Length: 281
Ligand code: NAD
Image (cartoon, rainbow, N blue to C red; front, side, top):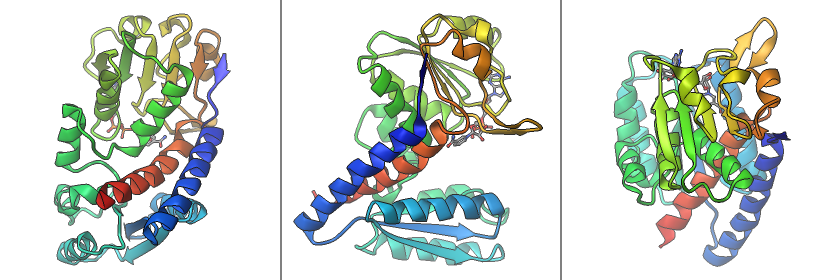
């Protein structure tokens, strides 16, 4: 069984991006810039943003974090986004979610200009992805996709089952696999027989949020299994896949932690570099 090392894959991607940023600096005399807006003081968001900033600096991006208290008015945030949309030194804008209740998430997402939407959440990018056009792709499914491609470069004709249909994970993941000519099934909480669906799959991506939902006897021999879930339990962090059981059957599997998580941030940096490159065309 191949244990897919997300930390290693992320380090390799960061190294590639570092090289690329150096080349871009020589070519354009400027570097891609990432601006993160952080509202409130929720601990997980603080940690995510700190990690994003650290990784951005590591690859040589210009990075900035704009902090607001959780009482900030929606109007102030939207005006700041407009300002960043018009700032040439900013290639990518990310507003860390979740937002306080009085701020309309969709309005925030739609105010970020699609060409700087490094999260890939803007409806324009969602549409571009589903139409097969160039777009920013949400970071977590992009990371999963890159890891799957490393194991199996030719996905054409493979059966893929995506468990979960969120806008953040399941839906964009399915689009990426479809673009690779997989036969894709999207499953969710109303799916009648999840085990039977999974047993058909050459590739399974689980993004649900239920600890160890996907069992060993749900897996076809030699399937590639990607575990997006991060669940806090009495036994520490576990994924949506029963790791011990599934590792006995699968060809390749991501661990939790150390699988999908590290690649998510590296893909945010990739999206920032890609937005910069598109803006220079
Ligand atoms: P979500 O709650 O938005 O969506 C969960 C999906 O799972 C829904 O579409 C729902 O229909 C489906 N679902 C629920 N119960 C089900 C069941 N019994 N059988 C089949 N499907 C079922 O969640 P999300 O934002 O997509 O996140 C999913 C998981 O991924 C969470 O554990 C989250 O913490 C984790 N996550 C990890 C990363 C990372 O970087 N590794 C990033 C984002 C989210």
